[in-house]
Each structure stands twice: as structure tokens, then as C-alpha cells.
Length: 346
Image (cartoon, rainbow, N blue to C red):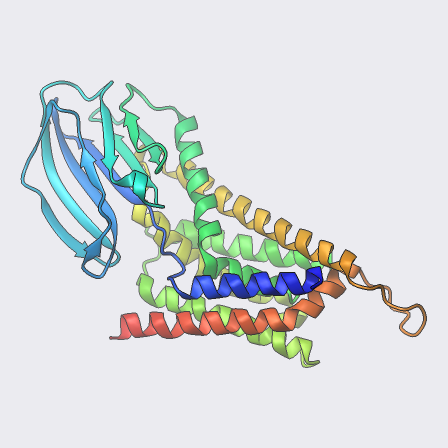
């Protein structure tokens, strides 16, 4: 088996694994403590859920904090609890833990909003499920938290990555690649900001179904181009990247709304979430072309003579991989399209 065949096999394995789960199965939890008096806090606790089943994650406040009767309900893909806590002492310097987080694969975004307008935002992980409430939070904490969330969202969002991958198979040179990626970036940045700030409001379930449809469309365009019948996406991939990028930005906004934005640093958090998305996307593209380049080194060189057109071995190899990859991408996206359409239609 040469490296090109291995690359195709890896795509198959990814598709099979992804087909057994939703594209955004790993979602963060969200904890918010909003100070309403000297020692009183309104607590919001959001846990990822599926149907009427939720993850077994629970908030453990300091021992000097009492917990009022919670109000709970399921909304979409989340289980939400609200309650009032009274603390005999200030929370500053106290530790808050998410019990059960260490046995999951998800993260929790925790935010403490103080009465004086300052806040603290931290990201808790299975390896670090506890944080200490600090007296004040700097901008570096917000930047780090939302940048990492952006990187994680794009790298764990298999549907977004498959759309980008299908676009990569339509390009034929580096200038087209730069134009295509730039168009996708500009488009999803616009709708991400507009939807997150409330300027545009759309239902998330139809958006997710439409994202799956966009992947099916681009995969079909790859097949047509490979068979000698290029469509608009093959001739001007940046146009398709921009149009569907607007749609994917709404999907990114849905994930960002799940965890919220700090009121005192909304532009900063939004900007670095978007930068994180871009960093993850560029990392994915870099890994893709590294694998393609390695494959091109393993494939036999084209015999001299005949075709005088000088082409890059990297782009030649990408072209050879495009048809089987398009079938795999299109099949998986079709499954998502049916699943998501059924989910909101019924």
C-alpha cells in the first residue's frame, strides 16, 4: 500500500467514525455566577444533553455557599438549571469544581460576573475541573479562553472541516487556494459577528441542515469536475466559498451562543474566538497539504514527453484523491442532511 492509498483509507476511517456521531457531539458546558448582592449569586448551569438525557456534570460550590431550589428544563441540546446561592463569605479565593468532568471528553466555560462590572472567565477541562475565583480578571484570560474555544470548535466540527476539504479538492493552484480560503474566512466572520451580536436571528436546526446540504453540493461539484464537467464551484471556488461561508458562520455563532460572551469584553471575546477558528482551519489545511505532498513523493513520476503542461506533483496527487474523497464526503454529508432535516421537521 502506497501513501496515497493510505490517505484514502484514513479518509474512510474518519468518515466511518464520524458517521456514528453528530458533527458537534462534543460541546462545552457553561457555568455562570452573577453577583446580585454582597454574598448572593444567581447561578446558571448549562449541561450538554441529547433528548431527555444529560451529561452527569454537577457544580460543587464552596462549603460556605448554600444552594436554593433549582429550576431546570431541557432546551434543544442542553439541560439548564438556575438557582440562587447565598455565601457567608466572599467567593474571592474560593474554589469551584465541576464534579464528573474528569470522566468526560467535554470542557466547561465558567464565568463569574461581579456587581462592580468586572468578571472572570475560565475554561475547565477533564484534567483541570477546578478553578479559584480571583479578585479581578485580565484581558489575557479572555483572549486565551475564547481563542482555545475557537480552535476546538473548528477542529471538532467535522462538518465544517469536510466542507473546507471538499473546497481544497476544487482548487488547482496556490493563488486559487488563497482566494478560496480568504472568501470563506471573510464570509463566516461576517455572519458569526452579526448572529452573535443579535443583528441576525435564525433557527439553529435548519442552519445545521443547510450546512450539510452545502457539503453535499461541493462534493458533487468535485465529482463533476473530476469527470470533465466543471461547474461554477470548480471555475470560481471563491464564489461558492463566500456564499456558503455565510451559512457556516451562522453555525459557528450557534456554538458561541451556547457558551455566551463576557459583557465587559464582547468584541475581544468575539474577535479571538474567530481568530481561533481561523487558526484551527489553517492547521487543518496545513496537515492536509503535508499528507498530499508526502503522497506525491511516494507516487511514480510522470514519464517525460507527451503532455508539456508543467504541473505540481502536489496538485496532481490531490486530483487523484479527489474522486474517492468526494464520494466519502458526499455520503457522510447526505446522512447528516437526512438526520438533521428529520430532526427539526418532525
